[in-house]
Image 1 (tube, helix red, strand yellow):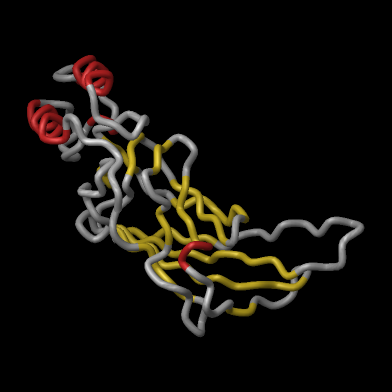
Image 2: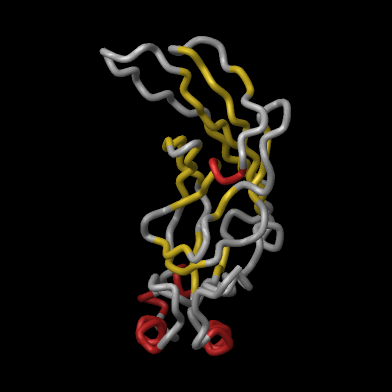
Length: 195
């Protein structure tokens, strides 16, 4: 089991402003297999974090000009977002529930979207709060629709170990093969849909 965690730096105050309270996210990510990727799709029927053995726990805290950290309870899920501009999102990937009395919450489920990244950024109330090392891939290369253009990218790497890229290894087998092509075929034509 591998655990990655992060404590995040606060934003500097602006000189002319009254000192502010800055929200921060402290996170813990646990992996049962760190080589696994979360394979997503635009319909939301991709793998869930639980299916690939990943847990993401976040504690939201606040500080006043670098002083002690205080838990922030009742932060709505919509203010706790995982994001990367290289992914196409059909819906925001937000926390599963509001923060509790200790400022704790978690992310569950899957991302409705496409693309491929090696990490996701955590935003707390619109403020970047750190990078979470989770590999995400998809049969959609990034336009929120699985179509012939995505097949071209897969076909270029199919059966060619020298062109291996985890972005196209949907079953985490270590190679791009017939299993990945079959998985792609089962998603061909899917696109963003209503949640």
